[in-house]
Amino acid sequence: MAVSVASVTDICRAARAASRRLAMLPTAEKDAALLAIADALEARTSDILEANARDLEAGREAGLSEALLDRLLLDPERIAAIAAQVRDIAALPDPVGEAIDGFRLPNGLDVAKLRTPLGVVAVVYEARPNVTIDAAALCLKSGNAIVLRGSSSAAHSNAILAAIAAEHAPEGAIGLVAGGGREELAELATQDELVDLIIPRGGEGLKKALTEVATVPMIFAASGNCHVYVDADADLDMARAIILNAKTQRPGVCNAAETLLVHADVAARFLPPALAALRDAGVEIRGDERVVAIDPTVSAATDADWDTEFLALTLAVGVVDDVADAVEHVNRHGSGHSEAIVSGSYAATRAFELGVDAACVYVNASTRFTDGGEFGFGAEIGNSTQKLHARGPIGLRELCSFKYVVRGDGHVRG
Image (cartoon, rainbow, N blue to C red):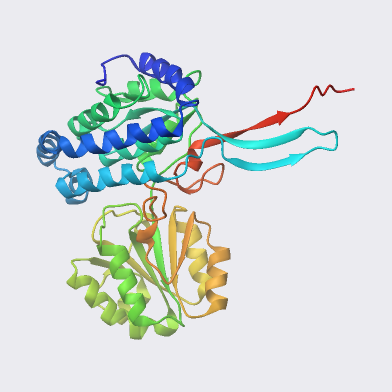
């Protein structure tokens, strides 16, 4: 079934009807649909690349940055990886009906707390066409219908990907809202009778636009202003490798590091070779006064730099007095996404683990691992920086609520 052109309300209404059927769909049927989607993605690679090329051309003409163009890009390897993730999702246990808890009351009633689909999930996302398939596959496996609303910069890519997925899913289970502006976004965000949850995956601008109008509950998969802190007891070679990976492996994504913090006791030893390696990788360094004192060629950081998600080869660097100073800096400027400490000290790492307020905290590892696929979730719809219901990578279980099923034998309450 191809994705049809319809009003936002019609798409959401069809999704609501489909969600009722999906909630009862056997695991085998969901998995068969997912495997068919994966096969179709590979079979239609040339069509997908043609659509993506149109988006890339328009993006270059519009002056999109290299980081955004990289987000937008699909090639045969990335399409194969998307298909592989769909198969990974099919291979995961079905969360629907999973027992979270169970107990027998003194009166003999058996109470089971079981996972159930949320119902209809809307995902609003920017120039990341892979999200079209990741989100659709996760929702299908977890028994949810999905309404997709991608950005205009990926319009052609999203359209063909959503059509391929919809052809192998129950009618109405995968809907695509496209072609409108802020009014369309506001209409989707106010479908509270038909949509159970909106997940905005994008920057602070998208978050603000939805917050101003939404009546549907939201879980934000928003910005990632991530930090790497190098402690006094760090293995400095390890620390250099971690910051290089966290900053340069793919700078245009939300789990890339944007700030490097270094303990004062090791700053003079660590920073010269680390900054040289970062510069060799094309990174622009912006440092505080203590960093500039060590390396006068570093540009002075502004107050705004500490709060900026650069999504580019730019890094803010600061020197701190201790782990408490690092934790305070991270909590003041971070976005609650992913934060890392490099240290051989249990006391320091424990203080960082407990003190930092973020969805994911890393000890002696790169922030780049914050990803549903890397966590074994198959894929993710986004990384929640909130604290209610879902936090961190949003996978199958995070797309479920629960219900209590109570079984008796003619029980009545006296």
